Length: 116
Length: 112
Image (cartoon, rainbow over all chains, first blue to last red):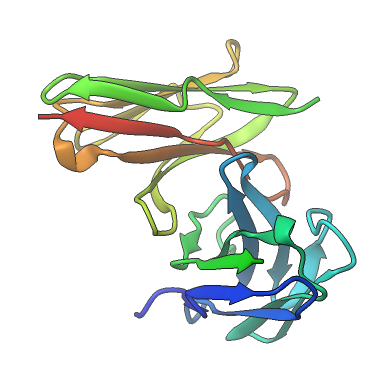
């Protein structure tokens, strides 16, 4: 298995532009998580989906952030408009919860976003 | 307020010694606790899970303890090697379907 796939790996954009991050979870996994990691705040959960349905988006910082999971093999995280404080590494992770909520999460390589 | 604190941002030890990393939590009642390893430029990788009713878990040179009275987990790497140098993250899972909450991590450097 290729693992969790994220694209792009690096994104540099200017303030005010729209940014779309993409994630393909591991086949067969039914939970998907979007995280943001910074030195100051560590790894923060933004939103997670179970069976393609958003379960908890309380970590989404503002209305500028939105996430979708149109099918079991694809999810997007969109920031519109982007701001310099959105600069961070964004991780997507997936897991299977068929045997409980405590299963390990498999992380993608991350997208390093820089907003100028 | 709820907090997860990992003992220090960075820890340096000599090769061959045992590294001990600490994870303390406040105002959580975790049913499970997980430890992850993160290398620079990569996503975290799962290492171990320990349940609230387990005192200790081992996997090769790794050992994790979980003390719900002290609200603390200790993560040990015995016979440490330079290849163990990485950032180690603890993560809590409360009972129910609430997702994992991560600590900020401890950066371990094993010096040859």
